[in-house]
Image 1: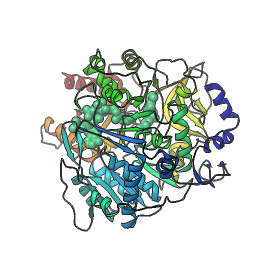
Image 2: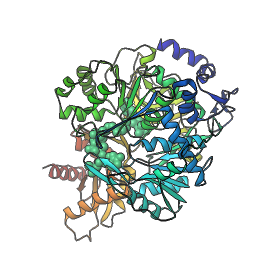
Image 3: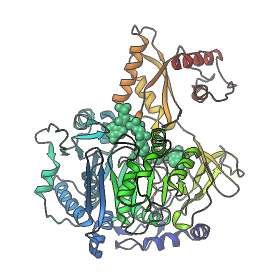
Length: 628
Ligand code: COA
Ligand code: AMP
């Protein structure tokens, strides 16, 4: 069935998406499916008028499903399991919408949401969608500086946050980070709304900070109509790592996003309304936006909001407990979560304690799924394990093995085939198409499908430069790979400086900027080296200023602390190797790729353009010393 559906889309893309758009409740149905003259590469459903929150909540209530479970909050770190119906969520979202309006927030205003994995986060997100405010969720593992950059870039009028997050056994105070971020930002938000958790109370700034629960209480019972939004109006901005320290604000619209996500729930994930779908990610990432919040709510699948880790909360059986207790049909997570579970419980002893009979499929994305991990998961779970490839920019799968369209044979190491909407091609650096099985740049023929980003927030030129300019007529994914003779895609590497650490996307350029701002540093280069658990880890090769009098250990510790305070713990930056010089080409380009290969013990060739080959010996010795 996949092949016929893909061909049907290719023959008539507008007809395909017009048909799919009928599954959405519009205030005004779109008559113009695609307008190629609008935006950078055209826009979808341009005359449609819609509201995303309406489609996620109100329409289920109107369909007499208000008492059905919409969201299950499962938090082993607070020993809480709480179920919310569509009615429950609608009541809270309406009250919070009224609270936002009372603070002067309206259509088009930007609201930053810096929150842990708690139901109040979902309420805040949906309330923004309801009143047409543009939310921008910032992952809790980012430091104040990163938060400030985002507040400035989107000129947030208000920030919603919580007193703390809970990371395993640790309580992480969020509010001081928010206070620092507001201090650092040039643009000052007018107000904040803070959810006070019982684990830690946050100090509030009189007149600026307001209490989340009080806001709900003050507006209890409020009825706030859903704001009519143009399909092309932004729903959210999600910042993701670019090739510099300045993150890119990926914009998601309302109409295309609804149509595309709804399609994926049935066709890619193969779930029917009422079946439980769990994305074990964080709402701060795109997977969280699409598949913890919007996708499952939209298609009437109870979703799970999991506040915990695959291991240690309390053990490597947590995933199996949740699958069994909530009758999960499909789980979506990053391969690193399974590597963590496997490391802790290689024989999957914990599984024996649970009934997983409802479980039908495991989906992996966010980083390369190594065949070893896939096979282990297949072995212990006895269900299909599906690798699928996508990006923050696209918001949904570019290539995968669609459960709802007939499961295709698995080829280990490949996320299978392109989804309707994506004409994926491999081109050489000159932009010419190349043969099957030849490695090249992975590009997508324009236009991108509904749901994919139309632009970057306030940065159309950057959008064009970063994604459209190099291969005219195509979207540059910045991934390299090949397509085999059966049309299966293989994702091999990034073509830019992005690395993937525990499924989290980081820019080595951004980490370098943080290191370089340390007073002892003359020069540095960050590379992503292979890590058995997290996939990749950043390692910093650092040349210190000759005048520095501190010990090597002191400098190393300070640099690690500096990255943590400027970027955040999410960078997982713990390794600094001090070196006398960095290897460069004669034109001054640092040979990062060669250093990475040396560190990983891979075969490497002396670059023909190297300025001084002796430097690579110095690097090798420094690595040997570091390792010993
Ligand atoms: N708020 C504050 N700090 C956070 C955080 C958050 N929301 N999320 C992570 N951190 C911190 C961690 O506590 C850790 O801090 P530490 O250096 O003090 O130990 C640091 O950021 C690095 O986090 P991470 O790389 O996730 O490592 P970990 O050891 O805490 O967990 C895994 C490792 C594999 C268990 C975890 O990364 C995981 O479950 N990943 C898979 C699922 C996933 O989230 N994928 C994302 C996209 S699908
Ligand atoms: P993010 O925007 O954080 O989702 O990261 C997107 C990047 O992660 C992609 O460009 C890839 O480099 C990588 N990625 C995501 N999914 C996969 C996958 N299934 N296989 C290989 N790489 C992946």
